Length: 113
Image (cartoon, rainbow, N blue to C red; front, side):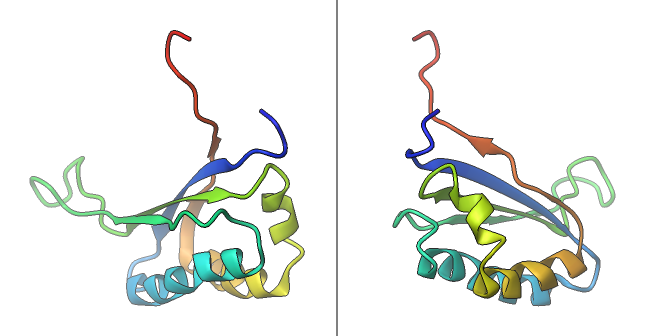
């Protein structure tokens, strides 16, 4: 992967019970802060919120789970974000209300190619 190419990040967040509304308000500010700092592509993010399917407490209960998918402008953007106060102003409170956060990065590929 080239450092100059966009990188897709699939953020998964597990929000502590009772903090969902607070988290959603922060998530609303997240991509605008990253994009305003010139760290993302112009492609808007996708957001998903977990829902309960099946029996309460069952394996498919995703309450408190959130997914955000967006593209860093390049391979160095994630590192730069940690140096920007406008980004940290969103990330620090997010971290305080999440019990787990993961940020795997992906590049496109064609199976069999």
